[in-house]
Length: 200
Ligand code: ATP
Image (tube, rainbow, N blue to C red; front, side, top):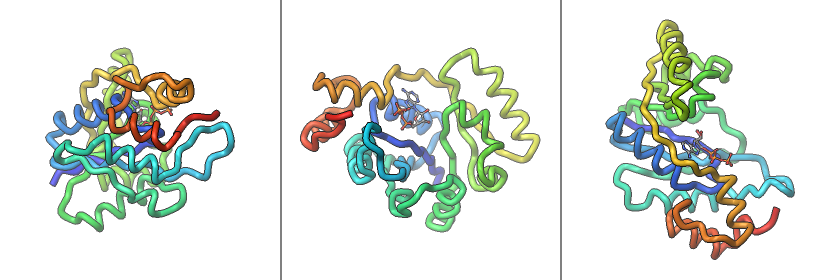
């Protein structure tokens, strides 16, 4: 199986994430996409960070009914900050026959060689990135060539991102404004019924 690995805070998951995940899923002809909320330290007042269990539940609701998409608690289960390399090592053990495609934003792609055990990451997964901004295309192509010269496998994907962020969603939830068009209806209902993001 060709398995995509898409990590993020997902605080909360929004339509921009879903659009991105679907674009990669189709472009890379994946069989499965694992959506992985990261484990973060307990939040300080003022950070509006929902519990891992809530972020995972919203990911499950958001990708429910999309064949091949699965929200995974692999990082939340570990209960501490996770490194990508550890997550990939664990997935490689759990799914020994799969090929992994690590989905990341262009900023992360451009700084990959600063990541913990980046060479091992490149052995474990194909590195996949997309330019959110056309001005970045040249830099991404240069970075791809340089990583490939060092043995990495890379795929650049054409993106047409939606102008949505979790910050925007949290702000609207706090102001009790409707979330239609920003998150799927089931996620909006979850935010409302659990009273998430109501305070700063
Ligand atoms: P916040 O506003 O809280 O910083 P966010 O909206 O950027 O959050 P994350 O959970 O941090 O959401 O994002 C996970 C991944 O999805 C990151 O790689 C990020 O670059 C990407 N991403 C987030 N929003 C979009 C979007 N609208 N279009 C394309 N990629 C996105």
